[in-house]
Structures are given as C-alpha cells and as structure tokens.
Image (cartoon, rainbow over all chains, first blue to last red; front, side):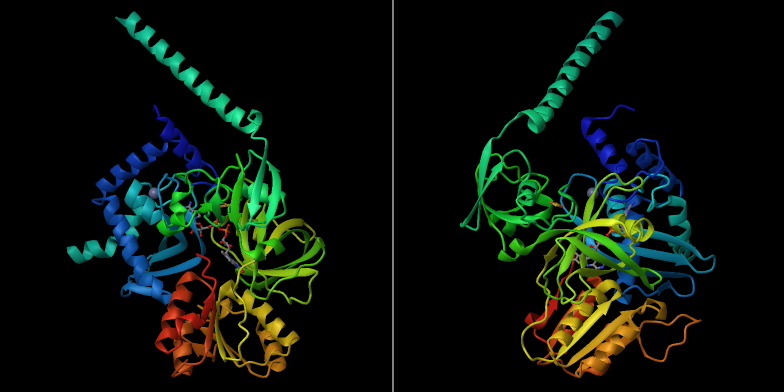
Length: 159
Length: 370
Ligand SMILES: Cc1cc2nc3c(=O)[nH]c(=O)nc-3n(C[C@H](O)[C@H](O)[C@H](O)COP(=O)(O)OP(=O)(O)OC[C@H]3O[C@@H](n4cnc5c(N)ncnc54)[C@H](O)[C@@H]3O)c2cc1C
Ligand code: FES
Ligand SMILES: [Zn+2]
C-alpha cells in the first residue's frame, strides 16, 4: 500500500511509544488505514457503525462518571459500567487540536462476566478516525466484543 | 508506451529522492550545522542570560538551571511548559495551538519546548521557578499502601536537601525502559514532612498502561538512582484561621500528609474535617498515620468513606460517595475553606457540593491536574 508522507508520519506516531505505553498499534503489522478499513467492514457485518459505537460508549461513560469509580447498572441485572479518571490528559495521535482525559471506563455484561475497557481517547479515535487500535494494543477495542457487550441488550430490546 | 511510463516513473523517483535528500540535509543542518550564535534571554526584565542559540527555550532554560514544568520531556504532547514570551519567539506553531486558548495566544503564552532560540528573547516567568532545582536521588524504600498504591521514599543526594511548601509537587523523570523508548516527566505531589528535608516521599497510584506508573511499579527498585525536579505548584494551606474541609481520594492523600506534618511542626491547630474516599475498603490507606495526626492535632478529624464495601469486606464507617458524607455531616460550609486533591471527577463533584453548602468558590483550593 502506497502511503502519503502524512500517512507515514501518522503511522510512525501510532507505532511509537511517544504518546502511550506500547503505542497504539500493538503487534499489528498492517498499515493503520488497513486496520480502519478492516474494522469498519467487521462493524458493517455486525450492523453497526463507528459513530454508533462511539455514541454508545460515550453514553455509558457519562452514566458512570457521577459514581466516581463505582459500578452503576446501565441495563438492570444485565450490563454494569464504571468509570475512573486519572490526573492528566493525552493528545490524539492525529494532528489536530484537543486533549482527552486519562479516563478509563469498564462495561461488564453481567450474565457472562465479559468486560470491555475503553478510554476517552478511544471514543474520540473511533468517532473521528474510525480507529479501534491495532491488534495487541493495550486498549484495542474489538468490534465483535463491542457488539456482544454493549449492544446485546439493545438488540433484545429492539426485537 | 511502456517505455514512456517507465521514463516518467524514473523522473518522478529522481525528483522525490532529491526532495527527500534536501529535506534530510535541512534537518541535519538545522540540528548540527546552522549556528544561531550567542543569544540573550531576558528574564522578567531583570536577569540576562547569555546562551547559545539553536535549542528549544525549555532546554536552554534548563541548561541555565531554570526549570519550567514539563510533563512530556519537551515533545510537545503535554502542554505543561507554558511561558510568557514578550519578544523574539516568532509565530505560534501548529504544534502549540492545541494547547493554547485564544486568550493565552493573545497574551503571548507559548509552549517553551516548541519555541526555538534563534535570536534574543524576552520572557516572563513566576519568581517561584527560580527555586526549582534538579535533584539526583536514590530510591530508598518502596512500601505498599493498597493493592494499587505505593509510597516511594527517595534519599536526596545532589543537592542533598529540598525546600518546599507543603502541597507542592515534583516532576519525576521516567527513563527509557523495555519498549518505551522515550523519557517522560510526570508530576507527583510531595507526601513527606517539609522539615525532613533530605528525603521526599511520593504516593503513586498505578494507572493501567501508564508509562511512568508502570515503570515505578514494575521496574523501579530500592537502591536505583532517579532524577526529579521541583518544587512546583501553588496548592498550599492558607494563612487564615478558618475551619477547613479536606476531600481526597486515591493518591490525592499525598499533599495532605505533607500539609498535616507542616501543621504539626508549626503548632497550627485549625479545625479540619478530612474526608478520604475509596470505592471499597481495600482502597483506604494510612489509617495509622491519620490516627497519629488526630492525636497530635487537636482540631483534626479523619473520616474514611467507602462507596460500596465488597461482599468479603467488613466496614462500619461512613458509606456512599465521599461527597455524600460531606453533605451528611454539614448543613452549611459558610466560613469554611475547602481543599481538594484527587481525580478530576471527584474534584468537580466536591466543588458542586461545597458551593451548594455555601462555600464561596474562591475559598476552594485544588490542583485539578487536568
Ligand atoms: C500537579 C500534578 C500532581 C500529581 N500528583 C500525583 C500524585 O501525587 N500521585 C499520583 O499517583 N499521580 C499524580 N499525578 C498524576 C501523574 O502525574 C501521572 O499523570 C499519572 O501517574 C499517570 O502517568 P503515567 O505515565 O503512568 O500514565 P500515562 O501513560 O500518561 O497515561 C495512561 C493513560 O493513557 C490512556 N492510554 C494509555 N494507552 C492507551 C491506548 N493504547 N489507547 C487509548 N488510551 C490509552 C489511558 O487512559 C491510560 O490510563 C499528578 C499530576 C499532576 C499534573
Ligand atoms: S514539555 Fe510537554 S508540551 Fe512542552
Ligand atoms: Zn483525533
């Protein structure tokens, strides 16, 4: 895949440990654009879009914030969520304005005990850049897990 | 036809190779060949530094032993290294704008790590920064406080003593380790007695996938040398007699330990109600130290608050959010001062409660650390 100088620079930043420990690409050897395209088509198959995923993550994060790190049930008996923020802020690896808190949110599908973890920066990167991070990255958000953990209840409710 | 395409591709290749080579030469020259010569930095209209041009303002000032706070080691990613540059900095760079508000830009605030010293520059910095020093120290003791919080004690070697105001913070240098190829600085509040000036204690909470906290918890060992600089910050006890409410969570305990030592050393017996919140009993810490302060300071009362004790934890103290405990114990905070240290979320929540209970906003003190 031919990359423009900007894309090359971006890939360098995403792979570097300049912004976050271990970088954003993990062990993924694909180009970032391929990661984005691949996750986008996975989402499509699951009937989701990056915008919808980001909106759901934000909704759950905002629900959890007032509990200051404690659990709150988003779907009673089924989905619980907690959000904890740490001091300091991070910038997005894409070149634009804005800083994102070091907040970490955990959602747990209670019947199967399966958890999904994301940060405020993940929400932004998914929403604005369609980027779920490379395989093996510490905060990689797996589209299939998003569907299972964040949307399972909604699907049943819609049926 | 194919021949023409090949020739065209060859020409493009040559042109782009020349472009790349020129860019590389430019970067090389900028770094090693271009000599900006001697420059002057005029600080606060009174001090004149004679420096060699070519490096960032942050680096040049550091070489002159003036330490501007910086949390990313000058890589333009933290936005902490702000300095007012009155003259000689050139236009604001794209790398700076994400961190500068319109007002800051109008007030000539710049990121000192992005401003290159190429000519004479005039800057304005707060006087306190002249007291900031770089310390070489040795990690003397690492003590578990909770499952995710440790107290790190450092023996100062060079210089061997530190003078700081209780409530201030230091910047710890996290070196390159494992896959992390960059040095970074991170800020940590001093948790030790200001009169024990040959050591500093830091209370550090592990942050998942955090660059510096992973190093502190998994790599730093007793006996290892470390570097830090400081002190910084203006979070400190006021000099009034007003009663106070402290609210903290997690590593927000740190500055309060230092403030309580300061009060004990100076026989300051103001009324203090200290609420320390955790989600579970396992998040609480330093109960013995707080009890000792209760014995030593007549007006001091420590209230640990547990949001929701876990099934296997026994707890008969205050429960719920730390802010709810404040609301239960006070009908009014009129006349009180509030001191906060913890996560940005906790600070926002506590400010709302303080204000609702009648505490004026200018009597609420905190380092939000955002
Ligand atoms: C004035 C001040 C005083 C402070 N005092 C203290 C103190 O006394 N004690 C204390 O413990 N802390 C204190 N802090 C906070 C401290 O400076 C650090 O910010 C904190 O320890 C985290 O640093 P870190 O390098 O470990 O984490 P960082 O590496 O800077 O950030 C980690 C966070 O980045 C995000 N992240 C990481 N990887 C990814 C990824 N792949 N994708 C998306 N997001 C990702 C996550 O939110 C993660 O939690 C203070 C801060 C300030 C400004
Ligand atoms: S030192 Fe971090 S932005 Fe300048
Ligand atoms: Zn972005």
